Length: 158
Image 1 (cartoon, rainbow, N blue to C red):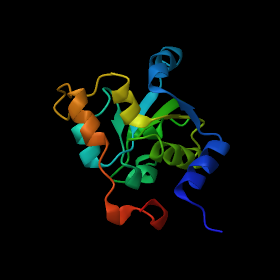
Image 2 (image 1 turned 90 degrees about the vertical axis):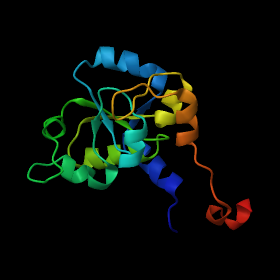
Image 3 (image 1 turned 180 degrees about the vertical axis):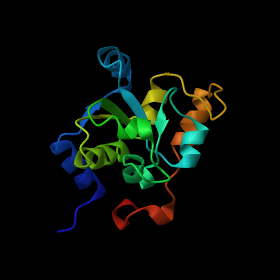
């Protein structure tokens, strides 16, 4: 039987991707001062609003970002295989899958931000745009919660 998106997320969690909530990030960073915050969302998502001091590698080029010899290589990320890495996405699902991929690439300490940047914003934690300006939390709430179109719903939801 084919797996669902939720099945893939659960498989990654079962294989060792850890999760923490946004309100636990400050403690995580105090305990892991060399940790890397890695945002894996799409370019427009990242440009709209992101957490300060994050590395950015879209999930679509994550593997190349984690390896030498590619145009997408991020040296700081390649060298971080034994550092704690907190992976961030919009809702905490893509980050789990990205974390699983990174573990397959030899990263040893991967954690996903449960509830993602949506949960970060819901917790009234600061977000910034590409120019470094603070992002209005109400604007971010709308930005992070696009409506599901009727054509995107399964028959059981219509």
